[in-house]
Amino acid sequence: MKLESLKPASGATKNRKKIARGQGSGKGGTATRGHKGAQSRSGYSRKIGFEGGQMPLQRRVPKFGFKNNNKIVMKPLNLDDLQALSEAKKLTEITPEILRENGLAQKSDKIKVLGRGELKAKLTVKAHKFSKTAQEAIEKAGGTASVEK
Image 1 (cartoon, rainbow, N blue to C red):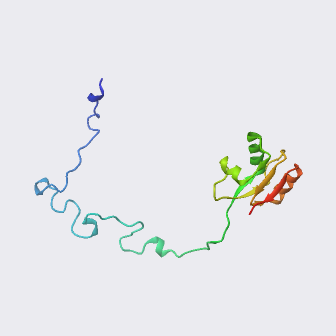
Image 2: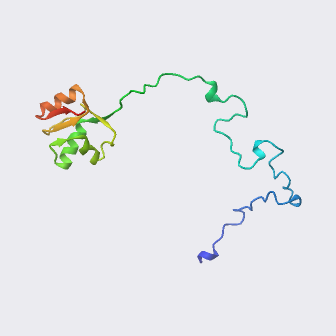
Image 3: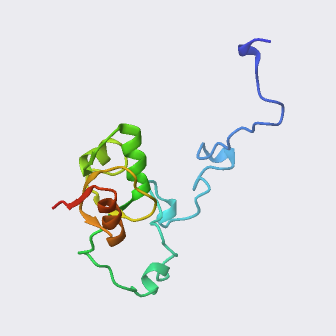
């Protein structure tokens, strides 16, 4: 068997219907597009949500709720994450820059340290916010929790 001798099984492929190739083909004239209207024109594409002129669903249904543009979204980070990072990288200080370098935060993330897990290492942690339990746990382990701008 050679690559050039390979071909699909019989009946597996069908020839494309050749449209707009003259009246003799049976598919000439309007080329199966019907008469006139936007859909018969070249370059036509239906808008998303178009319902044939009927008022589309996204315009029939009223706007709902409230969107707070001033909301500050925090990236949650738990004590067990800090413990694992300090053990893996042998760190005594954890800052947002170190978290970004190790893939635990993105460039624009504001970081909030939460109290899940146990912290054994004495760490100096800098973050944008701390939960009360997380701050207590860090200070209990002998470290410090300081808030960055």
